[in-house]
Length: 298
Ligand SMILES: [Zn+2]
Ligand SMILES: [Zn+2]
Image 1 (tube, rainbow, N blue to C red):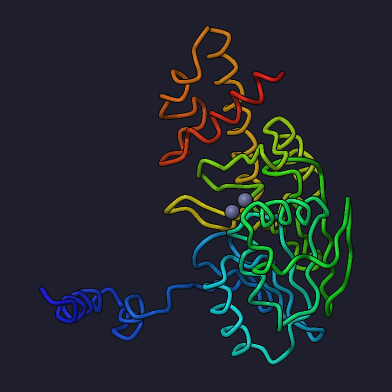
Image 2 (cartoon, protein in one colour):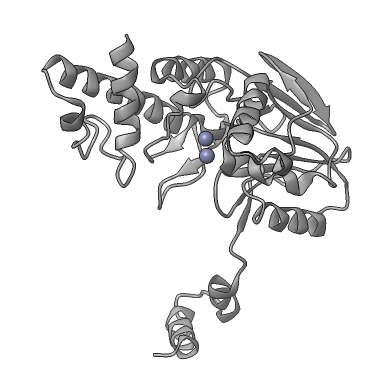
């Protein structure tokens, strides 16, 4: 069946379920990215890489994370259509390429880039190693534990609670709306990357999530860097707790296996983390390897 006739036939079928023809066609013809508004002024952009958050105000547009050089322009073009304020600030949750390599697209758009001080150091290290410093737009403002600033009637506070996914992950709290962008501190039902080369620690990551759950309210909404297929890039404290428990289960499983005399290769054959069956799909070797290394050095 040709694509056109498939769309027409299926649209007719779906028509009975009250999805309009126009909206159904849109599912096939839309841009590769998606925007989901969480409030009138705050939304998330997803295409490829870490979830981008953004905020409109009379003081300008704030963007959290930048994905890749080929996806960031899609966001910039769309936000310019939706809002006529200038871009006031780009924030990086951490240095990974799927969050900062798109910074370069903001070079002529905003003069301020803000991140944790270790995120800047990590971004520089990686760029020097990859010999692509000319393709970076580095943070020009950094913080160590807390940073606060206002934009319109929103108050941004950035928090650093210690090493987790890297040693430079910031949480960005939009206090008025009570929404926190967690960056890659939460992989929603997806096996995480644990970047030990940039100071990550699963044990410390668990403490960081404990501190977050204490700091923020029970009704706070969260934005996550990544989610498994079928799961949202936004969620609640329950999702934080589930990921917190998953990390604990990874450490416990690997620790128990090591005590039982299993080798690293044997441990890496596992297909599920006991106690956290919701985490499926690719990538289980990443947290297992990280836990093995972390427990081996003690
Ligand atoms: Zn990421
Ligand atoms: Zn990351």
